[in-house]
Image 1 (cartoon, helix red, strand yellow):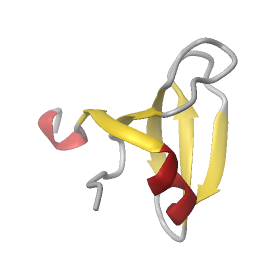
Image 2 (image 1 turned 180 degrees about the horizontal axis):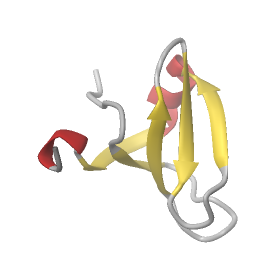
Image 3 (image 1 turned 90 degrees about the vertical axis):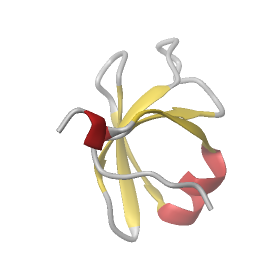
Image 4 (image 1 turned 135 degrees about the horizontal axis):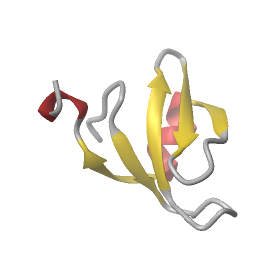
Length: 65
């Protein structure tokens, strides 16, 4: 089970067309909204699909708070 939380920056398996694969989690629930760190585009995907497509957490949010 992968651990992730609100405001974490995660790396996805496939990169965004803008060239980056770093995404910030901006909403959590049954669906998860993530925002591209490169161009600012946001996408909402189901939680189980997100868990499959996420590689790792790059920056934990609680380290900043």
